[in-house]
Image (cartoon, rainbow, N blue to C red):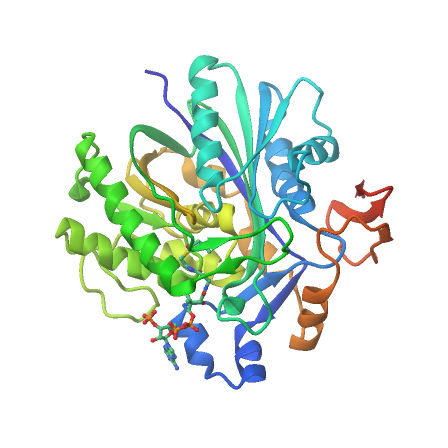
Length: 395
Ligand code: CAA
């Protein structure tokens, strides 16, 4: 069988960054609650002239520069912060990226699971036509109400992945474990620009879905826990990955380490909980992109991955989840050397809490005509709304 998986991967994020210490202090909250209790140090904040389209296209651009566009016949754009109820965000991204018209383009949605749905659909397309490649873009702006418990778990980010036969980074294995349950833990109604969430219910739903998806994987003959070298989880905040690791430890009986922060006591086999959380800790929640930001972090901070099996748990509230596995390819370090995620994170421009609150309250998702101020310096910008349609520019 042809090996299919992720050939290359790139990350982009918003123009601004907020320090969670500043947010905590402004609210009279002990910063430790956010830094250690949630495992988050910062989150990205979008400027008014960027959105999921500009972030997604910015993530995809270096991939196309490195790999060319030959063979790309499909663009799957996963998001749960969509900017239109009808038109796929990927269509605007296609134009910004200069991709030809012979690329079928679709938006995929099921909360944070959408990125994995797109990845699995891409694998199916390549299995049928191995000469084709699929560009998967997962891009989200995670927004909760100001002063709500979800506020410190906001963030923004996009990951673009090129899916192909004979991939250079990660071959995705065919057996997966799936769990779908109808639960109202988190959603975003059509008339709201922020998510509605029952936070503690969502944590329980996530953990139950993990147990269920793992059992499904086991029942379908997936790899034993002892044969999985590293494990990555969807990270709405990095402490959630620690909770997931604790749950998997209970379900499997395998002593996998739950050490999340540098310096934490290592209480079992190291499966990369800390190395896989370094980018997410600084990005905040990036919804569909979060698991794949974790993958970038692991690949960039672990030199011993060649030939190793990674387990990946994807969770999308509502809820759909999947536990699947992949094998890291021999030349992964050379591929990742071209990417500079740390620089992308360092380049963000800090905002004060007052500035962040103004940006949060600025118009989102409106069809009222407007011109956005030019703030960002990236390759693409959201110029505003004219005749009720969103307008994007290439710099
Ligand atoms: N020092 C260290 N730790 C501290 C502390 C301090 N000074 N003060 C509190 N803590 C710890 C608490 O003990 C707690 O730890 P545990 O979870 O291990 O018990 C942690 O900080 C958080 O404290 P609370 O539970 O009191 O926090 P909260 O109720 O204010 O909010 C939350 C937490 C419910 C997760 C909230 O941030 C939220 O609603 N977030 C959005 C929803 C979410 O992310 N859910 C995750 C699962 S759903 C999903 O994954 C999909 C998705 O992307 C949204």
